[in-house]
Image (cartoon, rainbow, N blue to C red; front, top):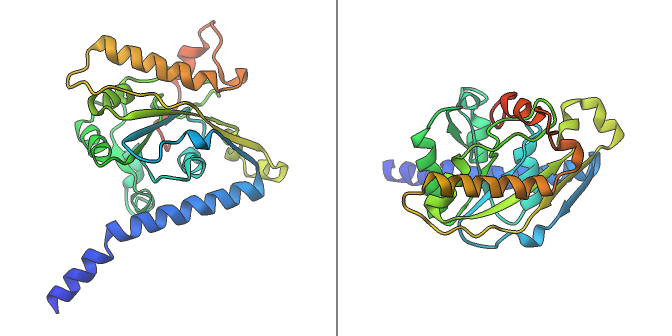
Length: 240
């Protein structure tokens, strides 16, 4: 009896429910976006079908992770989320979605190792390089963590740009069928480096930032008058 119970727990544990919940939530999101918004995805054919992959994007709204997952569609994305989201009882939702916690604005070694494990398995990691959800509407400068993980793992980086998701912060905007789109850019091949230098990290960070901003409309780009720093300093971590 004990062996049977152990076998059942093993078969129907987190490893069973997480993928099931993820795909249900992803296809439900695609359906909802198709109904309530003018939903468009460009470049889905650029998503690599296999191999370690880091999906990176700007961050406008709490809903961005499932929106990006719905856009990628072909592969399951494991997102980092701030540790506060994992408190009981609501913390069961990000856990079921397959997300894992990261401590905000800290050098979270555990989160980095967890991310590298995901990539070593040839899976997909989702990150918001800004480290914040924009409160100004402008994209902020990215933090180096994404580039560091990419260089240490040698994972391909897939830049994406989300447009219009900030409108979902107001439920009444749904009545207007807001335009929401995700543009998927060209994959960036990365060579694994055991101990990346600061120069290598900065170079890749700048390239990621450039690729994302190139796909965004001008209204999301900070002016040269200090708005960029304002955007970078405001806001919260992904999922805030």
